[in-house]
Length: 310
Ligand code: R5P
Image 1 (tube, rainbow, N blue to C red):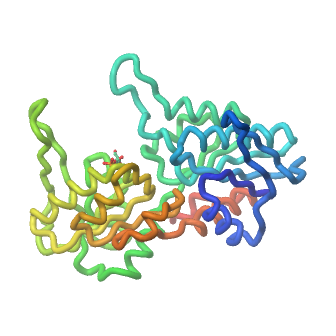
Image 2 (tube, rainbow, N blue to C red; image 1 turned 60 degrees about the vertical axis):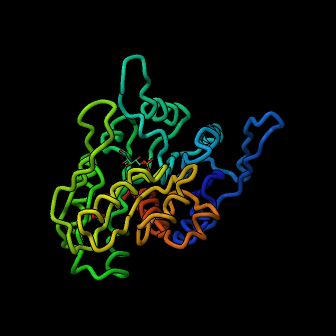
């Protein structure tokens, strides 16, 4: 097995290599003066089971292109099998046509990865489970919920918890966490009754006196989360903490979180944390290196990956 990494999340790649008791394959990913990407694998991969680690996080287009070129380099070097490992699969939010004459970019990116030469994909917490079906190659979608519930048990008193989905679309994910920590479930229902009117946040479930745990797949601007936290506190919640799989955290998101009433935002290491994230007083990053490392190992050994979640 050979493990290579693009530039998106080198520290996670190194932690995964450490878990697997191996070293990252030597490769260079550099730029020409006009920013075209050049890749060179500096190790023989002929006949090897190759895993290429790259989250398509900010800057999404550059990281995606790096991934495609790395796959192409491995394919042209006669790798036996190539698995694209995307702890965070960007472009996933464009998974349907929101209106006429719009793209389905998640499908386009899935096609690009396949066309570049990947034989398999390994990813985590896809924005929507059905994106798995956009790939015509075997695709494993891991879940961060077991890592989150372990962290929750270690750091919080789980007797007074209420797990909350910040929108109706996230209920399945929230229910999975609630089941693991034996907590009840509530939902924040965002509604705009008439176009032009501001959104109303209805909380479904009694959260008064509860320590609420919001769970979501992505935090980008932080708007969804901060609004949901506000609604829960207005409904009598004792405290609000959030567990989010992918800390996209664009623009002023970190500042929004640090000045919010959130007790803590816990994100996974699927996206390399910026210095602002690392120094924020109420943001903590939990590692998914063991989860991804174990899934890589099981893929290489042709063992069950789904049993990781039993
Ligand atoms: C939406 O469907 C997602 O699950 C997230 O809730 C959303 O992407 C978060 O975005 P933001 O932080 O910009 O509100």
